[in-house]
Structures are given as structure tokens and as C-alpha cells.
Image (cartoon, rainbow, N blue to C red; front, side):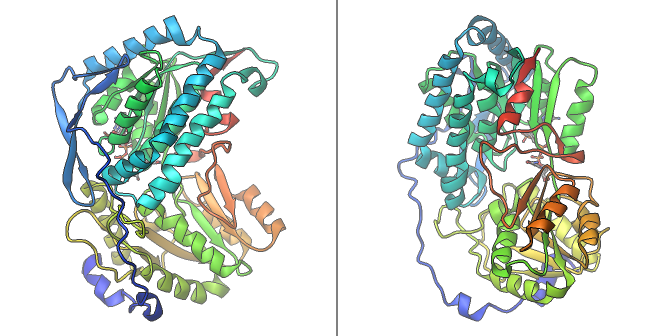
Length: 496
Ligand code: NDP
């Protein structure tokens, strides 16, 4: 029996009182947003046709409609982009005064704010995430990252006191599809502030806001070649990684590709930072404020359809409160509104791609086959597009695939524990080490847990809080290096 067939049997009945709350549609208008029919590569401050003379379609995952054609950069285009970045580094950017650099970065931040509505709509159309998330989180945080690092550009000697600080050179940056504009901001802002030039490659399925960012960079009058944006698939990224004139690679994406990149540049002088996958424990103790914890669990796993590297995808509940936690979660997931991402009431949008949907389905089926019990919201899913109802599993064993592998979808695995020591042991039993959550009333317990959990970011009595001033990054197979905050500058400077 497949997971999807099993759904009928295991789906709880509609939460009676919650289902009475009908929301009228509240669609964000797209009339004023201009998406071009075709986007070229942004190299040397200009939009240029790809050497390959090939373009691929980018779609709206909630409707499967084509939005635009995106250029596919080949090795020659990568070479051209790196050449422009090198020229801009040698002739302009490394020589410009730090306060001038700050002004450009500040200008990019202001332009993002100015165009935030259009950026949010395009992010939602191209990626499938709810408009309330792109509008309230992705776009404002992107602007905030540029503002924050604009502030550091002329204060590097304070960031690294008693050291001589210099830039590195040309950075090759590769980003994923889950937070397209935000990941571009995380990468570009510190690199620019530290005086480097850049070749950025967005993910194949979500290139559109990067192209809008290229237009913003042009409008901000950044010297040509300081930022180059080349689109394409994995091959384009691989060509960027192997280019001999790139000094640093910054990659966010899957652990598998991260390892491949690390192997491919071993022995070269290239610097590397990797922000990879996760399988975060979200640990709820019996003294936790339960209703707040439920909201934290929901936010931890269903935010952005669970396409989040730091998602709280393994829930550890103290045995004494398992029953109320599961009951409350069952009720709460039936109230999550799944549907048109452009509707301001939507909580869960479309899965980013057909390939990702198939991966989620396959892992969910493996959970059912391995004997876990599945609960799925009884929501109606739209007929077209890629969708997956919010789901959680109980009775999950430590060794099962849904407790070990990153699902990267709206699927939660629930496990239990009796003592803090058991929670720590189980939480750390993963190849990953990106993030964790702890819910308890006791401050001393929080301090004990955070000192023992092997995770780069740990939230206490909250989840998924991001700030440009806070470093983010992982241990073990979640990668190395930090983005955000003062730590985020370090990979982009030479210290002597
Ligand atoms: P990938 O790691 O394949 O993609 C991330 C970025 O790397 C994309 O821009 C991709 O291009 C590019 N890329 C792919 N292959 C290479 C290569 N050999 N050399 C250089 N760059 C390359 O992730 P996927 O998009 O395929 O997602 C697969 C899984 O990765 C997800 O299910 C999820 O588990 C995990 N993931 C984790 C993320 C995180 O934030 N930690 C983010 C995204 C995914 P292109 O998209 O064009 O293929």
C-alpha cells in the first residue's frame, strides 16, 4: 500500500470548529509586475546572450505555467564572467575606498526595499512559497543583509582588531532554490563589503529574482563586473567551481553536491564555505509552554513547505506529554491553509519542483513501509501544480529513513524521550549538525542542552528566527563556515 493510499485511513476527521472559519480569497495582484519573456546573462554590467545560445524555461510550480526563458551559461560564459570579475577586482573594486563600497551596498538595499512588492510576487510565482512569507521574510531580510554589511564595509579594522585586513579576489557563489533572493543577499553582501568581486549562480528552478537583482545592481550603478550573475543548471555551477581564476567558492545546497565540490577543489588554493543540509531536532520538555511550542513546531517544519535546511524536522517530545502534543498537532495541521501561494491567507504553498515532490513522496512512502503512523491534513490540494499536504509521523524509530534523511518537505517525524540525556543522545544521532530547538521553562536546562547539542544554531522557546547580525552555519555534514554577522565577513577577508 502506498503512502498516498494510506492517507484515507489515517487522516483525522476535519477539526470541526476550525473548519467553520472560511477565508475569502485575498489574492495579491500581479498586474503591475513585469516579467520579461527571456533573461540573458548578467556579465560585465550588461545583459548578454549566452555563448551556448540556449535558454531553458522557468515555471510557476503552483500552476506549471511557463514564466520566462532563462539563459544557460556554458564554460565559455563562466570564463567570460570570471574574467569580468577579475578585471573589476583589479582595476576598480579593490581600489575604491571602503566608504564608497558601503554606499553602493546601501543603494542596493534601498532599491530592494523600493521594489519589495514586485520582488515578493516574483519570488512567490517562481518558487511556490506563500506571498506572506516572501513579503514579510525573504525580501525584508534580503534588504536587511545588504544594510547590515554596508555598515561593515568601512569598519573592517574594527571587525578584526590588530590585524591587517584585505580582500580575497573573485568569489564564485552558488545558491539553492529554497530562499532564492535571500541566499543571494547572504552571499553577495559580505563579499562586496569585504572588497571582493563575484560570479553568482542561482538555482535552475528559481533564477527570476536573481535576474531582478541584476537589474537592481545595474540601477545602483555598481561598477561593471563587480557582480556577475550567470544562470544554468548544475554543469554551470561545476564550471564555476573548477575555474582556475576563482579564489573562493561559497556554496549552499545539498550535502551530496557540497562533498563533490570539496573533492573537486581539494589541493587547489581556493577557499571554501559550505552550507548544506540538516535534520534538526526540535526538543519539547514536559514543562514547556505547550501552545507556544505547538506554534514553534508548526513554524519549524511547515514554514516554506519545509524547504528549509534548518527545518525542525525531527520532533522529540518528552514521553509524559506525547498524547496532548499529538492531539494539538493533529488539530493544528488541519487548519493550515494549503493552496495558491499568491493568496495572502495561504500558509503552505507549492512544492518547488516535480523532482522535489517525487523525492518527498518517496520518503513518505518509505516511512509508511517502515511502520510509522502517518497523519496528514485532509485539505484539498489544487489539481494543477506540485502540492503536498502537511504531514507528520508518529512511532518513528531512530534508524528509519524519515528520521535520518533530509526530506525537505512539509513532513515531520515525531520521536520520544524520557530524560534530557536521552534527548541529547538521540538529537545528536545524525550526520547533520545545522540547527536545533529546545522548549522548556527552565533556563538552566536550556543552557545545559545548548552546551551538549551539536548544532550551529540553537533556538530556545522559539524557532526559525533570523537576523543579519547572527551567524548561521553548521557542523558535520551540514557544512562549515558561517554566514551572517561578523563571522560572515571572515570567509571573505585575508588577515595578516
Ligand atoms: P543541489 O545541491 O543540487 O543544488 C544547489 C545549487 O548547486 C544549485 O544552484 C545547483 O544548480 C548547483 N549545483 C548542482 N550540481 C552542482 C555541481 N556539481 N557543482 C556546482 N554546483 C552545482 O540541490 P538540489 O537543488 O538538487 O536539491 C536537492 C536536495 O538538496 C534537496 O532535496 C535538499 O535536501 C537539499 N538542499 C539543501 C539546501 C540547503 O539550504 N541546505 C538548499 C537546497 C537543497 P541547479 O539548481 O541548477 O541544479
